[in-house]
Length: 467
Image 1 (cartoon, rainbow, N blue to C red):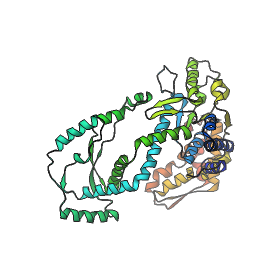
Image 2 (cartoon, helix red, strand yellow):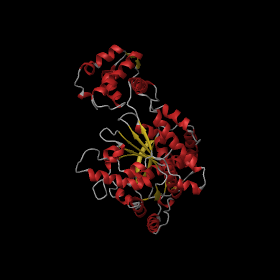
Image 3 (cartoon, rainbow, N blue to C red):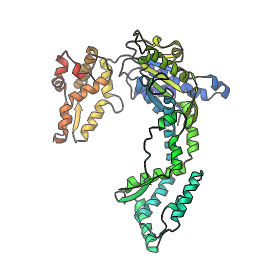
Image 4 (tube, rainbow, N blue to C red):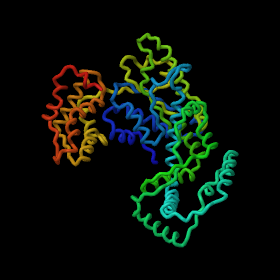
């Protein structure tokens, strides 16, 4: 993947997020500095730490979206955590170190996906071979050694060896007639003529959620893998169209072809060098001006987060992970507190401060129309599914933006999220009656907006419209 400059990163962010130019510029520089660091000598790299960011601004102005889009741009492991979900060590709640474990899990998923794409051509070939065998089964014959072989496989697996997959399936005899029919089916399969034909496949049963898994993971142990090595995986039969069965078989074959030790190692490297952790609602763990019984616990959470942000080694089920070069982005509304209410040590670990501005009426107009898959584009696409062309006039869009802005000023300011509330109210009848309408086109005018939203415009009690 080509490295993107700060200007290119901002240009991409502009496609999805309206305004907040200062915040976009700051995160783009912080991201590109990671690339600069990797070009230096190993000794110099160790001393250059990421410049973590603290974003302050009202809810719904784009703090989370900036961080999420940033991770997508550079294909970096990214997790979003709520600071309020963590509690001080010794209390019931999530351990702060779990944010790093979640990040490694995401890196493993990304690395596995990359490896699967690399082996997919070969995996598809093997899957198609298996589909041919399933569509034209051979003549089964009794395998008297199967029970003995299964016992041998079980002993071998307990001793750490690999199970012999071939001996688990019943032996079959392939006659000339079966062979010729398989050649014919293979040709049709390659031409895509059998995609809707149903076939019964035998696949491994999906692993069940282990309530002890997260607890063991916090101790750096992968309990599920240990149990899987002791107990043979159960097979289940599923009848599916060929296209869906192929995907299941491709996944199964891909698991056999990739090297998971390599995946785990690369995932840890990806986490330590490129990982991004977004800590939301960090203002909620400041004591602020409120002297409550929870103040000690709030400060305790900050002190627990501090060593992770400063740089420490966290044990995960894939191996130890250093947080020295993970980029941390913290965000909060800071409506009832201010960044200086954080403990001084934590403030020092977020040297870049960015203030995001409240959204204006013009910002709302742009949010409705400009971004990729904007709100208006989403509703137009949804109505198109019913065969209806939905059109918004310029005046209607301006009126929607003005109403959203006025409601935010009159009640709690929830930023761009207000637009979703307004649009759902505005289009309620259209969305409800859409499947039964025979109209080819519906135009939303300024008069229609005023009529449908008259309650919001005239009623001073707007509590029913607050999300």
